[in-house]
Image (tube, rainbow, N blue to C red):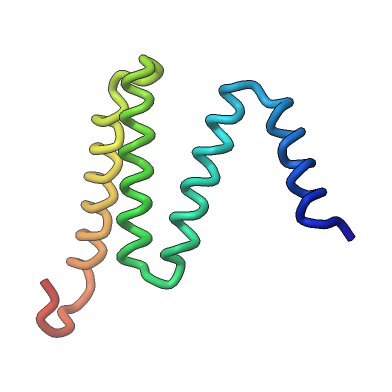
Length: 99
């Protein structure tokens, strides 16, 4: 069994071997993993975190010049998804007073 100190040393040596870009990606992954796990039992909060992540990724892609249209792509995907859900809802018989 390893002690917390030994695990910390392994983690530090692994991080030291990473490039700055690899560390940024790892930090980003850990950040979102923590946010997702914090809202695992709340679907509404999970949606907010997922949207925040998508918006942040689109913003980073635009700023980096990797995907200048990233926000528009995200908006288009969300628009299409909403239309699909609305169409499915419209094709079902009405059940109460849902908005």
